[in-house]
Length: 128
Image (cartoon, rainbow, N blue to C red; front, side, top):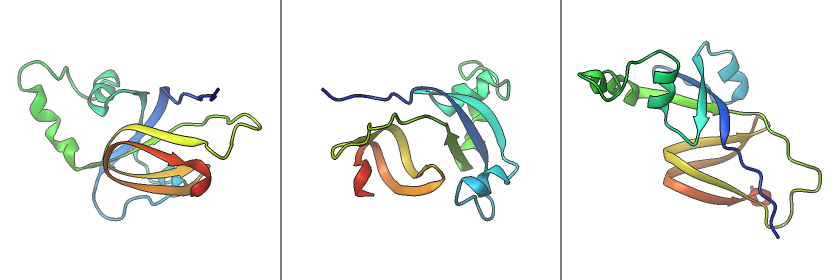
């Protein structure tokens, strides 16, 4: 039977307008000065912005127009987790559900893969 580690739950979400050179790794991100808020996975950034008190309710009045500016932002999700000893096997997969369009994925600060034009992906952990 396969063991599963769920990464659902609390994450940190850093974000800023896509202007100039964007952070290329976790070290650059930590020095970037990007705003950081709590985020829930699964979830969406609009609800995270509302829960952080940055935006008003998405469903009233002209509030949806306030979210247009975020179409031009970069979003960085980060979370620490522990992989139990002996967990990684030949068929260990990293499954990503809900990535909207593009992502660079880092594990322990090391680039793992670039994800383009998808919403769900499965990646052999040892093949990268």
